[in-house]
Length: 314
Image (tube, rainbow, N blue to C red; front, side, top):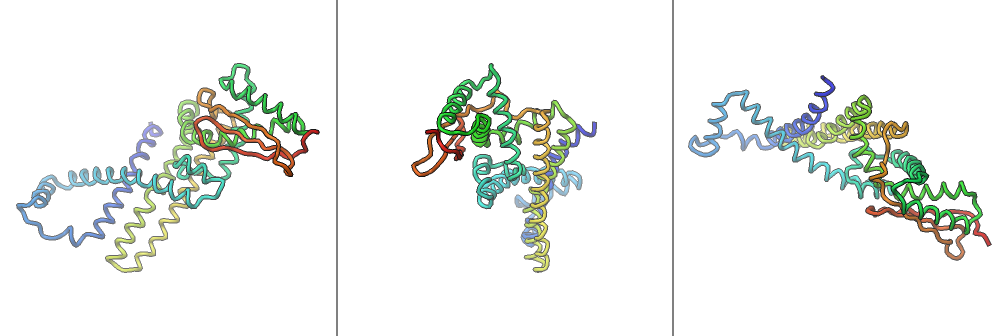
């Protein structure tokens, strides 16, 4: 019973806390204008009379509703802002993923996550290409043709050729694989592995809570510092600390998803939603040994490229 209620409580607490903090910052900053004598016949005078008549309980309910609405709006703004900031400060290998999937940063997708997802996507692609009745008919035929072309142009073994093609194909699938991991896998996990889903949901909600309230807490300290003295600005250290802790909890939540996929308790990229992969193999440019192998998927702009060493056959 309690496990069923907790996810709902977690969903409410984040916008409610953020909204209350923003209201507190506004009151701290504008208290001189808010708490002034009001004409009893004006609009604000009638509102004050109405609130006084309702009583404390009703006033708390109204403030809570207002805080909740403000918090929901702030969550949307924060998710957009965090996505833009992540693209600017991310390392090169994460920029494309963050640009394609703006929510990947708040989901705790790291370079380690990318490495794990590439391995899982390569394994998943190999498994799907090996199925005679696979829905990826174009990918299967293109993979076989590309494998033959690599064999004609390079002296490396068949196993090595397959590994290289799968690695390039996994890079092309990266965006769709990451999206599936952070958006679709939790949905499948909830119905198949309830205990693992609860572990993921707790870590995810804790990360969301900390990241969402980080800037509102900073706003409170700024407002109090303006009115009460600069020493209150020392509290601003809470904002970066909360963001760091939030990212670590989000990364832990995503690691849980990676582990359940690795254990094959939930499948990554089900065949019906798996994009077709198209490979292109060509000899290296003059003076450059080896082969150039590229791959792309339908519907995603990330294109993977790989330079394969090995002398071409004469």
